[in-house]
Image (tube, rainbow, N blue to C red; front, side, top):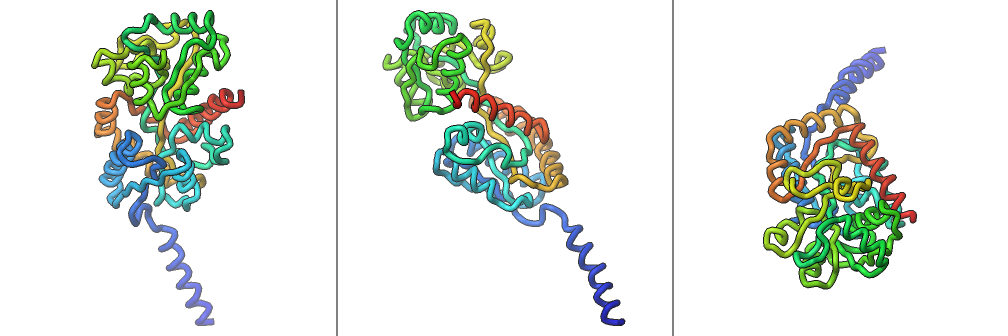
Length: 314
């Protein structure tokens, strides 16, 4: 009887002590699926710095590259959903599985908040005869296959921007031929040199060449004009057609994260945003950080998945 009573007493003491353990009790890791030094990596490090101040534990950033983003995204998905491993999911998670690169999708993650938003655009060289996005589309309609475009690799976000733009006008995907390049910088240099006719990357990526007088922005693929490029019309304004596209990244945890930990992370990120350091960095780079939390973030990722799926299935 005494042994039974002792066991019961110990269990009533030990079990609550374990159950009441407060998160976080140890360092948190943020996995970035892209190389160090880029905008995604820098945003992740600013996020880590802010969370470290709010949570009171070390928050470390680890870059896990490879497989065009698959390796890092998979590492986040495969981690234990205990709040100690987070990750930066990027727009590629909405397109990779549609291309057969992986089975990963937005459903493998618990969203905390959206971070960076980078809108697509349309650029031409300073010497181009095209002065508006509508002129580009009309020329492509009358001369299918004559114009050449780029922005990055095949089936990249900026290739899909070109396809979506053409489809909004009822044109075939190859009405403007897409030439793959090693990223927007290479594409813009080729544009300035006269090797291609248009580029479909973001106004922010083109900003230095616009300021140098080599390139013009014709439109931005956003619902409203950007405060950073207020003279650049939206695609709707420029063509009276509907097409919007944005690259983005989001702070996530593996699926199955406890709701209380998700709430703590969201509340911490709201304080990080309020300090303004993330927004300041983004604005200097020509893009925005637009917070979006929890269920709203999940719905956003689902809608983006459907958008890119519809494009890639065709």
